[in-house]
Length: 322
Image (tube, rainbow, N blue to C red; front, side, top):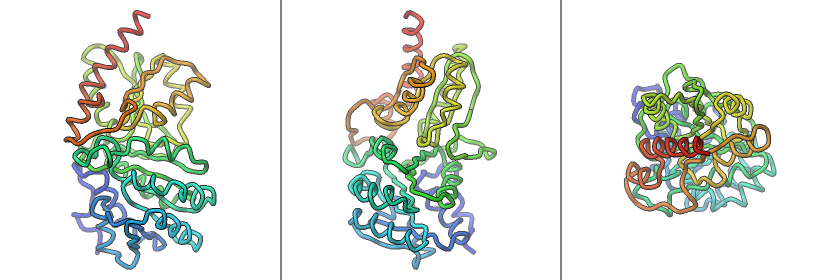
């Protein structure tokens, strides 16, 4: 029986490992599910699938453009292909994703690991800080950025059941579970993790866990924060953004991604069109990353817990002066 304890996501799993284990638990329920790999199964978590379902694991080698085209062809036959590699290598196949998958509306699922500064020692060449921007710009493409092992487990089931192209981020570093067992992922819906009246924080991915701690830090300063986990970046939940902005009148976005084109940009588009509100985007400023431990990089580039808190405090001071 495949549902052994070592295949159940643990609270300190990386998102990639939690994703890989989720595939094992779901494979029997979805016999049409196949996994395509570009010679990085150990780095994406799908080595679990390869071991247990070798006849449904397709090794495409370091040929990402070809892998996407193969996946589109397999989808045309009724299979459900999940394409896995590092996010930067998916960008190598951007044209094929655009035309063979999205333009043709093929039922292909793209899962990119090694995203953001969370990649750590692999350095700027592997730290994909622009994947959300790239994939949400493609018509017919949905984008999901899970925050924890629990959420990526639920989101993995969703992408298999969902009809149509979709891109989902995973992650490299071990991650403490920040959501409780009652949490339910809903595609296209932001989720309130706390309610407040002074400020809204909207976060995604690894920055949601940090934002939860920031909410606690700010509460000690009598700043009541409303926190929204926005795991679906496209389609973005306009309703919850506008609803919360009306209540708090100030919005901060937090993400392990460039501030250009990611969550912050998606929220800015909603606010500017439907409810203009002061907005502060916290993320990586228009730059590449570098090699280092994830915690050190988060600190240097201003997306760790302390930096997020201090940025918000200083921004609120300036907003008050203004």
